[in-house]
Image (cartoon, rainbow over all chains, first blue to last red; front, top):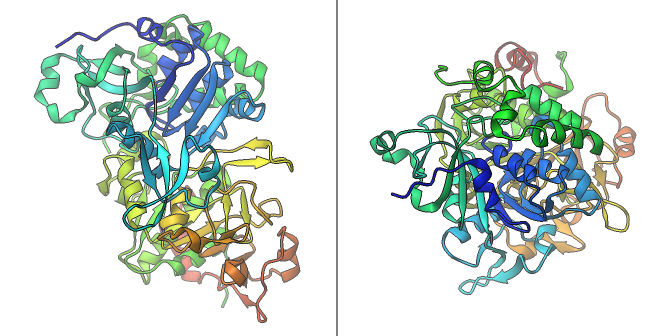
Length: 299
Length: 268
């Protein structure tokens, strides 16, 4: 098997400006925030992002002025309100948005997995999502029954970035037995062209071989794998650590003004040249584990 | 004898009566503050109340869990609490929930919204300036669109406010009974669309002309003028107005001592 373990900065250097990027995770967990911070450090701009439900990642890119477009079912900070920088950028016309409901976005992801150009859905019928852009959504009829449908375009991306739990050096990524599966990560990975995955930990290949049923992303789908513990911070990784409520609150608070958002990025992203430097802002890896880890906790 | 109760407890009692035995009730991820109480908290407490009375076999879906243990409700809503909450089953990917929605497996759902109009169209996506340009970007769409397309009894849960109850929504995130004169029937959606709109002042159904909103009952102590003043259009008003049946003392007792003693669900 081919070794695919590389550094965060090396992986992100492969992404050109103007790329279309699918992103994994959910509102509160497993967004590839470490990769997003590195994209901001390298100032890769004019990006289009495609997600199921997301928030912090897209908001940080909007704050950095690197986001051109976003398509998803949700962008927000959940308990902590709307995504402040994203909202400002959209309202000012700096970022365009494609809106899709959950079954519609899911269908676009699954169409890409199967090599299809579109998928029919019913949920968008009669809504304003069906009218947004005829190059993405179009009313059609079933060739067999004549029923109305909305055709949604398959997701078309250049790169896919996501954060997983553990992997070997070849990029076989595994989930734990007990986890929170409310996301589309496996399908987003399955439909990816160039997949970059950060994981909480790199483990021995032999460890992966013992439980192949836990491998949700086989190495064959992966271009690069990177070890980035707390790579979703300040969000959670289920079965690894809880969300850092104080840090998310501080982010939301800073984002209330453009100046605050910029100061946040200057301090926590541009002012922290590596992922380790970022973690050091929170006392380092061991301090974060002591405060937020859920490993070994019992119900 | 009338019980002392809060508005949230009244809403719980109203919703509980709408849940039939065997129903599968969809609880969304919710969002902050009041919207969490209305869209998540009330539905969960109401289902538990219905289980203890007429609907022992009603179950909830919440955060990819089906039938989580409502007798051991999480006391915080951090990620790990949800990861470890005992439940009968856990769907292995969000796609399965989408399929369950489209397949028609959900009986009841709850909807919060920034805007609701006369025909039950809902907007959680964006508010516009009068010329149609964007004024406020909201959260997106989530699965609310699917609720109104596929669920058997979607219930809108919002506080009665003029800025929420508008003649016409700025953006149709989720389809009600008609839009710009085009009836819902044109689209052949499997679900019946919004069935009730439950607010802090009154309950509405959509039995008016062409699926228009109609007052079903006013909550105790609330007058018709007060309600009409809080709506940006004129709903249909039946000849005789009924009063919303309040919770019994036993129901209030159950909510306060057993179902939600620490008010983690009925928050604000």
